[in-house]
Length: 144
Image (cartoon, rainbow, N blue to C red; front, side, top):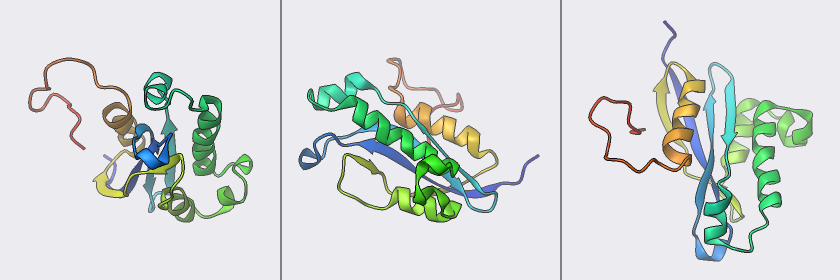
């Protein structure tokens, strides 16, 4: 059994028209400082983005989202930010900014599998929820 570790996460948002403050969730970043886990997942729902802004530059938004995962991985293609420590990269990615790509506030919790947590966040916070009745207690719903 793995040890339960503290983690931080933030949801990645696309805000196509910053002045309107409307956004869609497009990814998640999870950091577990003690284990050195820092990973992001992104999935852009183009239809939802274009519903907010029919003139959004989808290829540009995709490129900016993809860089987040590159920076998390510490890849040289992520530029000088990717060379920082895991914790510094997480803080840089989650810093408050007024741009098309933003993150939610940072949330903290405990888990024993950060990769599974990242998938859970994508399923519950990013991907459109299926149209059905609310989940019954204990059936793996999306309570984070």
